[in-house]
Structures are given as structure tokens and as C-alpha cells.
Image (tube, rainbow, N blue to C red; front, side, top):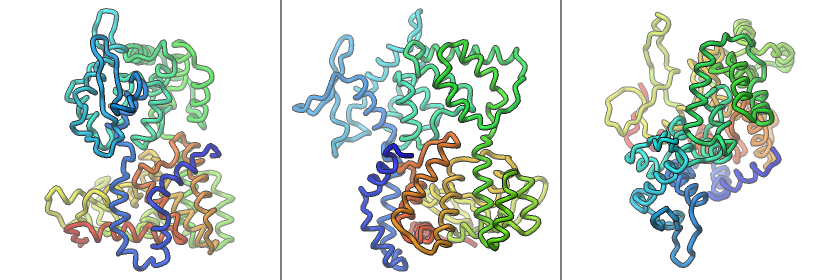
Length: 468
């Protein structure tokens, strides 16, 4: 990715200060004294652009008459009056109270302007309380709600994609969801960009798909094909419908590309204890990249099974013995990590933790999840790919037995390329989990840095009880 994105991410981390990381690296065993700084930092940057501020920024950039330097206000010309709002980037700006009534009025005006049908009916009715909640939000929202907001504020495809990746820290438009493809089509062309047209096309697709049998087989490398086809060839409603109907076998299924990338990383991660000769044999056979191949290699002792690998990768996480029923079998395990928000006041013998460790560890692949991913019982997500890539890259650095600043950029570029191949957005510093991985990579022993921060994030939580 040679488009300046790596430089952008480096600047984000530089804002906090590389010197602090290097100081910690010099005395990694004294890390405990510095961990509060890292934990506070990670808590603060979970969403570097909160949804409420992102919405206000968009409204100001897209619809204001301009910014008055003297009054430090944005002005909006509504049909019967002019509304002024404060500068939302001021340090003393209060997202809870400042301009909330004004922004609600502006929001409703924009929604009515673009989403009112010929009879005068508002086609996208968002309650005032919901608008207030989103404008005040200091975190994010669910994906479906963001699409409603994007149509209410008449965002184009570029702005919507930016909100998905930079605010929600999720993938951009999902080409395996026909409704999101329809949203992308509508938001790419001004003549179609309204909630009324979006609903109309969704209903048309539902009706035509119900009467048209699925004939085309599932396509390999579907996401790349769909992305290029929609961008280059879909210009009309009929072309859109033809594409959607022809590709129904690929909708709501799991990405082959993401699955194959995950299997490849799993093989590399779990074969780390093998000899060079054995690794070479695995490499020559791994082209199959499917569960039966991995299962056979595990049976032959060439690969770790998921429980062994999870224990190796997640040795820094406190354990809690659990008993549960799965497939009519009783399973007793101390590998399954069940974490809840200890601030809720619940009583449990399991690990008690507050928001930071919970938000980070929920992204880590425990053994149950590794099995589910390989069996394709669950889809491979970006968190699985990012962590497995980080772990494998750390093994590579161990084997290389040296570290340079260039390794940091190599990881960023390789991981971003991997995510883009899978139709996902690139690493984003506003995502706490990904930011922690990027910070850890600044140390000469990245995985040790990662483990220490995780471990101390538990130990420094108020009321931490450990596990039994």
C-alpha cells in the first residue's frame, strides 16, 4: 500500500510518543510502572473520532455556509432562519450539551430535504430521541443504524465508506450483503441517492429473487470480482438487478479468501515447533487450504491442535475453569475465556475485569473459536486475521533473531495487503485492539510487549480477583 496510509498511522502513534515505548523496551521488566500510561492511552483512543463528533464534522463540512473566524461559529441557512453552531473542535466543547438542539434541527432539515416522497411523506423517520443519542455518542453504533444515518444525511459512497472504516473501525461496504451493494449503488450516483430509492430497489430484489431460481455456482475470489464489477460496470438499475440475481450463491456466505488466508496463517503459527524439513513438506501440501487437510496434519502431529495453539498464543490471559454442554457432550476446559464487565457488580468465580481488558481479549482467538473457524461454522473476521498475522510475524522475528525499524513498516504493509485482499479495511489506530498491536510492534520483542500489557491490564484493574 504505497498511498501514504502507513505514514498516516505512524503519525497517529507518534502523537502519543515513540520515546515512551523505547523507554519501556529498555526495561521491559519495569513495564508495570508504565502500564497505567498505556492503559489510559488505549482507553482514550478506542474511537479516535467519536460518532457524535464525526456526524457534526460531516454536517459542518457538507452543509454549513462556512466558518466565521471572528465568532468561531458555523452558519447554516435554513429556509426561514440562520442557525449558528460552535466550533466543535474547541477543547471546551461539550458533546453532551453544546448545540444539541441546533444540530437536531439541522439533521431533520437535511433528512426531510432528501428523503421526502412526492406525496410529502418522510420515507426515513428517525425519532428525535434517537437523533439526539447519535449526535451525543462518544463511541459508535451498530452497522445497520449507520446506514440509516448515512441516508438521512445524504452521504455519498465516499463519506459512508469513511464512516464505516474510520468511525466504526469495520470493513467498508460488504459485497456479500445485497442490501449493502444496493446502498453502495444508490450512494454512488446522485440521482439514486435517497432512502426511498434504496427501499424500492431492496423490495425489487426481494421480489425478483423469490421468483428466480439460483443457477450460478459460488464464485472463487468473489469479493475482488464484485468490487471491480460494481465500480466499473453497474450504472443502471437493471444492471444492478442482473448482477445481484446472478450472484445470489455468494451472498451471506463466508469469504473463501479470508478463510484461505486464515488457514495459511494457522499452519504457520502451529507448525512453529517443526523442523525446517517438516515445514517444507507442509508448505508444499498447504495449497489445499481446507479443514480436512489441516485436520489430517493435526492427526499426524505436524500441527498443533487449536487448544494447544490457543494456550501457546494466549499464555498471558488469566484462565477460568468452565463446564458447558456442546453437541450433547459435557466439556470441561480452562482454555475458554469468559470475561464480563466487573463494574456491573455481578458475583462470579470467573475472571473479573472492566472495560479495557474485556475489549481487547474479546478479539483473541480461543480454542473453540479456532475450531469453529476451521470448520467454517463461523466466518473469519478481521480480528482473527490481524492477531494471527501479528503472532506469525512475531515468530518470524524470533527466528530472524534481530529487529529493525523497517520490520514495523513491513508488518503494516503486509497486514494491510492481507486485509484488503479479503475485502476489509486496513489497520485503523482508532481500534484499540489494532492500536495495541501496532504499539507492541515498536518494541524489539513485539509479542512479549503485547503479553505484558495484556497481563498488567488485568492486574491493574480495580477489584481483580484472578481465576480459580
